[in-house]
Image: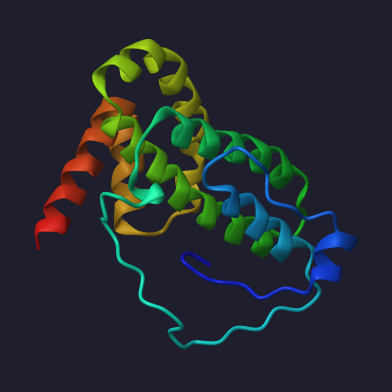
Length: 173
């Protein structure tokens, strides 16, 4: 479900009280999962509707700051609790896999925080990042498996730096 657009009926959203959370970044994570969890039927179109330009410096999604990190971690907190109540293992696996991609984003953002922010919030952030590392159990990608092993062996800071450096290399290719 990564990088997908949805078309939903307004009455469906109102009936299920699905709204964007205001004043946070990455509000679409929670919104999309809420839609998918409540929908009785989903259809997909496997065609491109637009071109998404990655790595744009002026993009709000490309800015790494404390608000970005807190917003995504807040959503991970919320969905960790919701996942515990989901009985259907396929649904739980899909949600876990989707959230693991966003967890990897938090590791990138953590590494990219300016020094002052990282020092001020470092221990609190590191603790929250450790709490959500279990999401990598749902990630079957090479990046996810590597991050999981680096976190186990060397910790959050090393995993964050490794992912950041890998992304920098990918951007140059």
